[in-house]
Length: 227
Length: 227
Image (cartoon, rainbow over all chains, first blue to last red; front, side, top):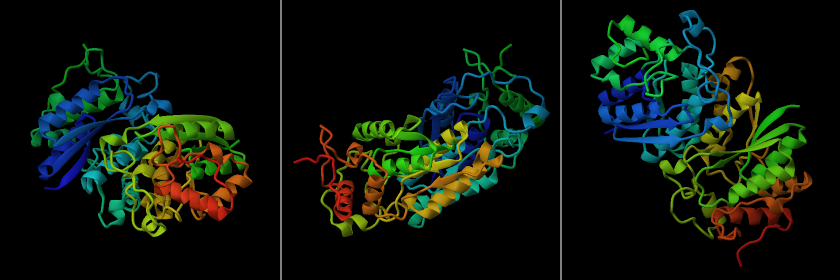
């Protein structure tokens, strides 16, 4: 059985990506990052999702990106709320974390090499998140080259492949795909700024994109929101 | 003043690289990794070197590569001793850590982006360590592409450059360069398997390459060895 590494945040995209990797009859090794998020709710969602979908293993790498600063997700700056679609789509969001996907893929590559996997699945999306430079196909391709020339396995002939099955899908299409694959989306978490009880705020960019996606997919969002 | 990130392990190569970055009148931000090494002596050497040479800042990123396993430097396997030059040069060493430089450069890139630096210095060497795939020019070049397409700064027009001033130097040439730049090499640490008191073993590949380098440079090695 083919082994794959799947980067898993516990959001809709990475959860659907894990379901896709499993639907291809691979043995999926899910990898999450505890990178000094302001909440641990994301980690719990990742754990729930990995168990529920049947990942072979789930590991959490603790990395401290706060030592560098530079993002609303790791610094103490306010997450913007209730922005319009145009504002969300305009430029690189304040929630951009420098080199985040490069760091995540580097860890995935290390694990892949150890367990002799060649395939890494990453739930990036170039439509709804066009503002993130490390969600674009040219970045993914560049990283594949790094993997193939920079590892013992790559030099030995293994061809690493970073799969991004969602890269051209809208959020609504991703949600439909998830439902089609039998994913329980009530286990997922998207909010950048949840309440202490873990309820989604409904106003951050991530909540807004999620709600819009469900609306467009014609499917009710099964998670709970504040008020 | 130009800002640079310098990856610093506290060994001869990264120490000399820091001296080179500083000699180019840059403000150097030194970055070390506490990645579950079996000893903390390397971290202390990095701290001493950063202070002594006058790095602007020195940060230590704690990362746990042990969660993946796969190397003599992070697992509990024996470090090979007293190997011949031919054995050392043959193939990829057991001390190879999967994707290590990819992970290190990814962190360096994150910090570079935050402090608005475009230059990253890495003391890799393709001569004495030809066995490590992530010490080769093709890897460095591939990583530069990742940096330029995968970051907000890169997309905005900043050209990241990974400098590898030692890549074509022998260990003896590096040692001579260090001495020429006034580096106090007694502060450096190279051994993979030091005694509890921090003395170098004299028998691991790293000690053997170091000793050979000093011998060929005609300079006495100022550090202390066991027995």
